[in-house]
Image 1 (cartoon, rainbow, N blue to C red):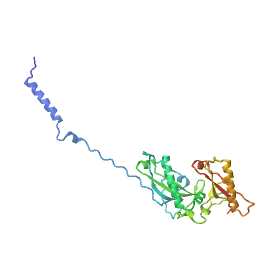
Image 2 (spheres, helix red, strand yellow):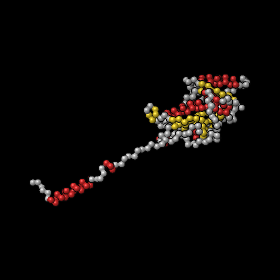
Image 3 (spheres, rainbow, N blue to C red):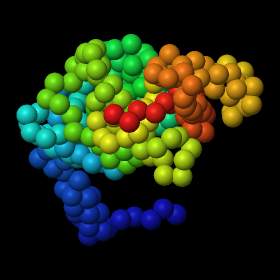
Amino acid sequence: MSARRTPGVLALVVAAVLVVVGGCSSDEPVAAKSSTPTPTVAPTPPAAPPPRACYDMDFASAVKPTTTAQPVACTAPHTAVTIRVGTIKPVLDGHLLAVDSDAVQQQIATRCRAAEAAWVGGDEETRRLSRLTVVWFSPSLEESDRGALWFRCDLVALAGHDQLAPLPRKTRNLLSVDGALDRFGTCGTTAPGAPKFQRVICSQRHTWRARATVELPAHARYLGKTAGAAADSTCHDVDARLAADALKLRWSFEWPTREQWDAGQRYGLCWTPDPA
């Protein structure tokens, strides 16, 4: 037998339905309560370094991969000058590379070395015999994460093993002038291989000078006797052409360092006395 609802029960049911419906009702659609996402604004990449700027930095700062050095007037004492500012290409074979990766750093090195040759002038032999070289800087990892893609090439002159020499106000075509190596060439405090030998810039006190370079065979072993003997003979001929007395020849052939050899350098230096 079916149950029957009394009028009182029906009233309670109706009231409960009204409460539920009233609780779900709203003057605005439910969807309107969700907020619209705020567009993400990409950070502004740090500005690239200024071109043609001069810096007064020490050797330790010059060999670091990044720098915070501030420019100085090129009329003031300085040890570095920016010869190129360019843009890194961090994508290789479809992969995004870190700014400190070997591939990116090699890319920067190649472009900076080309910039050095174009900037200082002179022929390849003169550039090899000089103490002028190029160092490069790239953004820090934090800066690269913010979109920085610049690289900077600075020209410096090595005064000694870990010391930079001051640069003149004008450095473009510095090695194209006569006598450039008298000031910026590679000299030594004594004969190469001697206990107190130090490589110095020729504007400093010295007794020996690097006079020429000798190409080494591509197939030669490092410090190989056959290649070394042939190079030594070439250096003898260099000294014979320069010496005032053919009976008092003194010369020395110097192999590249192991690090230079591993980096691909296949030439050494011919040294002769230079008591000037």
